Length: 312
Image (cartoon, rainbow, N blue to C red; front, side):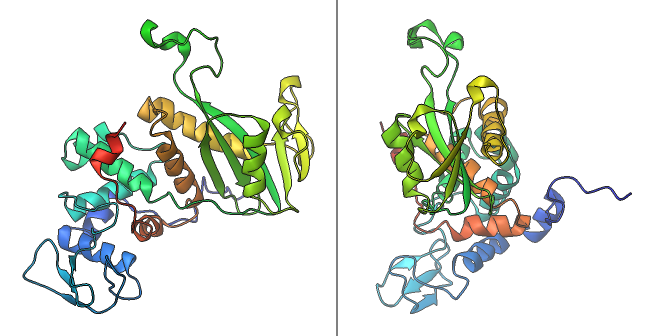
């Protein structure tokens, strides 16, 4: 009897050795970013015009737009904007965060590619911006659930304890939705888990004929969709097609990343980590080089300055 291969065996991966053969230097890495950002031909990174010319005598800004008269590179107005980090190191960073299911820490990245931890931290948040692509309207059958992220009250320093109870106290709520037909997931950080917020999320991101499966939370009562709920509080987790197991699997992966890789996701930056795990989940069926290409193609317009990252 034939044994099925583990995981998504149909995907074509890339080993580290193959990665460095594909991108042995900054020049080959730069050309790859150019081809993925502008697959239909070079365009201006400022005005999107196609009347551009190569300027071989300008190492940082190799292209010039004859329309808006500005110089630019493939880094311009992307998540690499104004970065002094070489293209090969950016390729490795994209590869690592794309292929590491539980994420990659800034400490590991700084050791792997030879940049400071501060630079690595900034790079990772910049790449996460590429997965900030907005919401999609789902149809068919979807699962909806919330989860909470943050440190346990009992583990906090006395000065940081809220002294307001246990459970979800001091944690940040995230609501998510999984499309059973496409296996796609979308999630967002929310300030509260009341009826208006949760039902608003469902209505905004589903068509009227969608069937929604949730747990027994009172906030979903009266949902203006065909709705079935399972009673987690009474030990019911599956009733025929009614369950949220697919979305629970997504939360489990994100929490393993929280506990085992990042150890902390501050409320200030939690939405970026949500984008990371959502984006990585949604592109998992693709080959590794295509996953990396998707990140590169979504890089335009996603610049994130360090002073904006740490502001507030």
